[in-house]
Length: 391
Image (tube, rainbow, N blue to C red; front, side):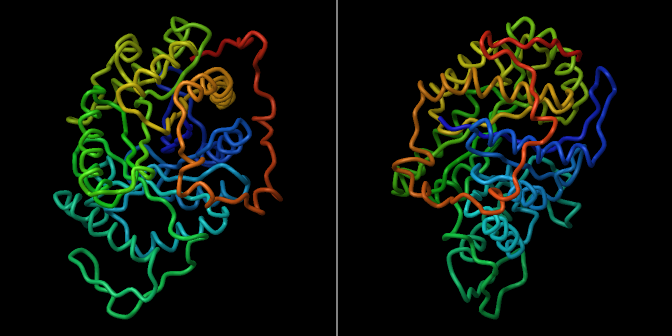
């Protein structure tokens, strides 16, 4: 299995302490986390996109470009690019620019988004969200694989003059994944085009996501696509990851924060059923507990999903030093066991996109370890932290 760090850049107060960092500090934390993730051997870093709510991820291309400039090997992904509300021409241009800057390290993850308020903001009808996604993706594919494109559709003005977007992608069109959370539509669209699927695995019971995955695999086979390109990614729950020496200690430290954040979210039809930390740890997808608990949970999901890429999100209302410490513990104490138990060809032998990325010169020349990441308190010999963090 491969591992991704995802930040959809929520900008929230810690509900227990009331503390919140500035917008500038929060954005810089994203970049510094990506640098540290690369140093720790994570294969991918993903930046989300939201245009409503308590998020500051309205410009993921800007953030990904900043990360591209200070890294050299980690793959850069979006999570997700809300293609339904965007202009495919601009998406083709912006992400091809990041692809060039990063030496072909870009892979897009597209979706219709998980925030209904985005649609009126862009003057769009929420009822068209799936049709918008399908039409705009069809155009994006052509813009990245063809030159002199002419096109007409329902939701955007026609391209009546032959159009070639610039810059062109670094080494052919980047791979596109499809984010899937609630509907068979995204799974079916991914299968139609022979693209990989990324299941949110966020707030619903695992059986619900398994239905979407099974539909994707059946449709993928029906369309006759190459099985070598059929990869699956999985998220890690709305609660993210929190590791301590014991599961009881993890619940004690993070439980009050998790429960306050969960209680504060009231979006009918889009709320987690795992309202308390015990329920979330026992049955939900949140990766909270000891390293052994987290390993067992990921492998239990892998047994059901068969996924190739595991995404994790850090508890971003916690002190930044603590976030980096969790990132390190996960890399050292969880990742090796999962990689050994669940091998994959993703980004390796057998993956048609494996050789696309090259180490970027910008990253080699400019990447430096951030000061706050240079010293991460830990005791590798005992896999124990000498610090107990307040929540």
